[in-house]
Amino acid sequence: MGIVEIIIIAIVEAMDCFAVAIATGLSKSGIPYSRATLQAVSFGVFQGMMTLIGYFLGSFAERWFNAIGSPIACTILCILGARMIWGAVRGNSVEEEGEKIAVKNLTIANILLLSVATSIDAFAVGISFAFVNANMVFATSAIAAASFIMGIIGYEAGRHAAKRFKTKIPEIIAGIILVGIGIKILVT
Image (cartoon, rainbow, N blue to C red; front, side, top):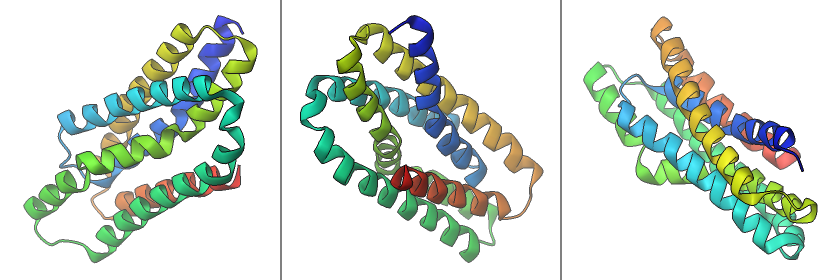
């Protein structure tokens, strides 16, 4: 497998991270850059790690993964999306309280759950890399870097879009995006 193909795969794999990062940026303006950066780093680490795990486990885990991995990822993303929608609908009257909740909603546990949910596809890609003798150092690095970069870009895009909207609509849209990604993972 060539460098161009690996780069294209890395970008495609990072698109879920991009969408989730947009949702994070849209959800609340009170999320500090450090938390958003931690999310992007987590995306990169998990995407790279899951690619390697998939590569090493190869075809042994493919049947189990296909049966159970997609429903788990779908469930995680749908729960987080539903919580985001519920928080927007429930609403808070004081902006400071809203910012505290935003930071609380992007907890380390939520970041890890989002990272796992978005990296399950990378596991399957790793399995496929085992059969085509891909350069795993380059492939893993490209996927991790693309996921990190898309995480940062997505957060910024979502944050800037959220500034234009002064309603709860961006947070509801963010929740719908997460649920949509979860359903996409389950269907495909």
